Length: 90
Image 1 (cartoon, rainbow, N blue to C red):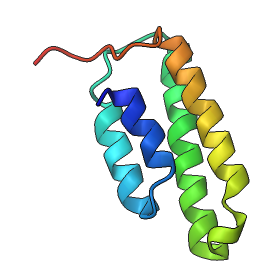
Image 2: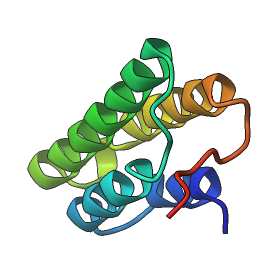
Image 3: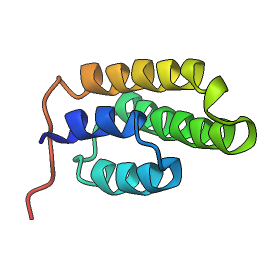
């Protein structure tokens, strides 16, 4: 599974904290890109953390908008990365 597809799946994960950690690890595989991509990645992670906070504090009933925002931020990451996974060579 490609990195961006896996990140999209993590938005729907039931364990939000584990999803954040996995997302961080996946995003570290991206090559250093333009500042816009870096900011989009940061925004996406922030939205995943917000989703985790909402689920933890208010339960699953209030998560829809946070998931929608995270999906939009991921779409921006996908667009800025050229829609393909650009990963570091190991």
